[in-house]
Length: 70
Image (cartoon, rainbow, N blue to C red; front, top):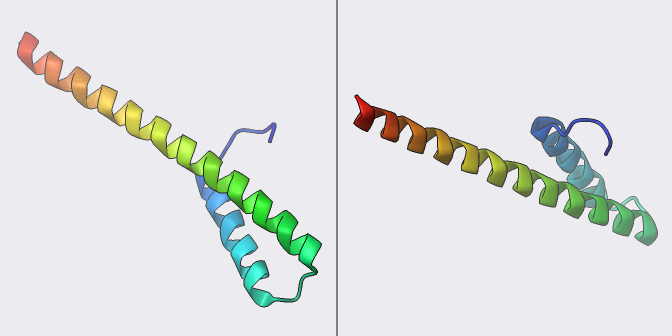
């Protein structure tokens, strides 16, 4: 993915992959390829969420330190 990652777009794509896999209309190779793509997207989503959680923690720490400075 060379364009900027969008968590919302990735989640929509994962939903579509799940829908396709549940339809049972795909060949085994197609199902496997979609499953692998879904796993990569899930990993990216988790990394993005972890980074955002860390950012929130830093913001909260900065705010708590700022309250001691006053």
